[in-house]
Image (cartoon, rainbow, N blue to C red; front, side, top):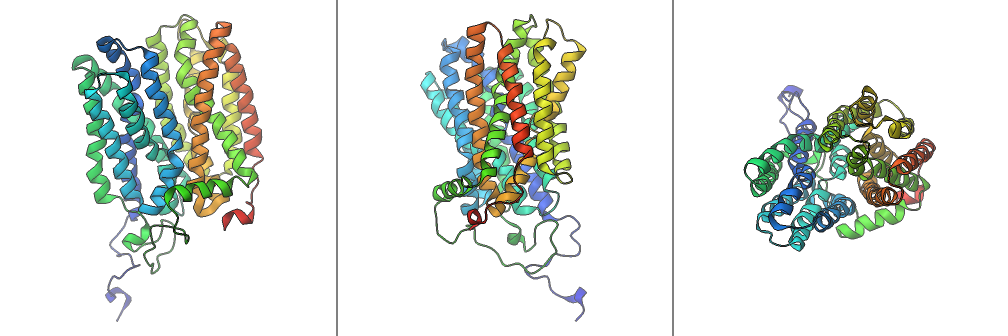
Length: 436
């Protein structure tokens, strides 16, 4: 019997299949990330309508947002462990349902503490499970080649989702009320669930193929848990942290990504608009400039992913952090009451650099920690959110004590220099005992 007459069994790929199924999984993951990103754009739009209707202070509502941000980061490593134990599809579908439930139940709130349950707990857990660790897990599980490019595209999915939802939510809140806007967020997350259940697969062996870039060979279906100890998801995540903490490179990645979070979400994302307003720029104009950062963020992240497949990720991180530090050093002198070409250049550069650090960081976690890479990246990402929270508070203190943000911008520039040095010096080989 000729090879062309052989039956298609487990581990063989039909010759008629031109596109590897990994690309369909990646496309589904991208749509899921876009659907989950609705709430990332929501608080800034919904807080003022809630204040007008109920008289709640922004501080009261900000507590729920703070809880959301903390859970967004701290859920990530446990979500990675859950994906290894129960599969990517089940965890992703559950996360989308949590986001949809949190957004939909918001229409019934009558007191600020209820936002802690909807915006904070439900949506925090949901978005945390769909954080960047999701992109890392899909990339590591399905791709042996083009990993940098895929992680870059998936990382850009969150930014794309925010850009798609922000104008829709803003118009809906203004024309139809904040409740309709909340239901739009819920619908966006809920509509993706059937797609995830239909097209997302946990591992290549489910379809009898290898990862993209690996030679096709008979493959036995692997169990959902990649551990022989029968651990629960929490124990798996905590053991990954314990072992990773013995490696100096892990702390370098943690420090660099904490500084990344501090200088993006924590500082620029939170304080750019009030800082620009201090220089006489209207808040709407400053908000428009910040939205442009999101546009260039997409291009920068995809480009960074492409470069990660070709250039040492340590070099990329050092360049990204150094460039970010230089731009922050000049920012105080660029802010004014009008939009000058110099501030536009800053916005473009900062947008390209915003989360360009993610693909090379994911690549280093995979290089150093092997199969545990997504788990370890979950903890590194948690450091990102902790850094963002600390920087947000400290920058506010600087503004209250000095009347301006200049010291905060200069301090952030110095931290970026530290991150550049640390990242460039990350060791190339892990300690063997951490990979048992």
